[in-house]
Length: 345
Image (cartoon, rainbow, N blue to C red; front, side, top):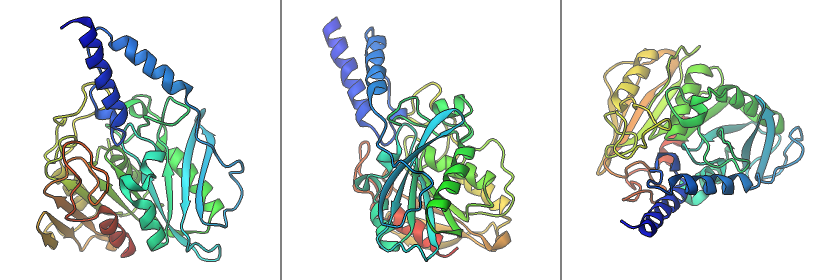
């Protein structure tokens, strides 16, 4: 192959990587003799991108619906988060809070884009406050960020970033900015973000009432929650990144960005044991393309629930935007299932 074709192919692959913003960390890097040059140019472009505009006073109370961006120094690094306040919010009423974590290689902006995950629409309909923290990124823009979820992922894991401490500070900030119901704080996330939600269930069980992970199995190194936590896991049978049966994943990139994923069955088994639940599940949903199994009689009156879709791959069920070779499953809506789960806590 001549050098021109090699360059074209490498540039094409790089562009594909840039477009794969739901989980770009799992895309293949360009290969060939121009890899180093292309990578350097790409990194330079990212370094030149400005940080998102932020609201100046992080200590000011928020009284009106809308979207607000904030940044603050944590661990010697500038970290960011975005708040969405629904139209129904009233300063006199304690309001539930859902903290939503983006996938590895994405950003708070991507997670908060409604056509990608539909969470803003769900917040407006149900009246809960949404917070989108930004993972650890080497860029001012906050893009290509990852979470230290234990065994995964990328720079956040490799550099042992204190993401748990960062989230504690975010919740403290938000609780000062808004009237948050401290007994109804929940977490969710996509892929690496869902894996990080499991770490929060282990280390912040006194804060989070329940967590819901989408396409992100438990990757914690150790887990000793102070109290039981309700767990919801949503996963596609044909996920080709975080495979249902565990392992590295057919489309995972070699190197530091990925891990040997725990299987979904082992993830659920671990939490059924931690929460001291009845090990015999009850089928609570059975329809074409999806089913949900519920584990009850747990310590502290919590529950563990697993929802499985037959198709959709590594995606968010019910989302508008397709990822990879097939659209997300429409058999269930991840947003609907998780909010029903959270509301019953």
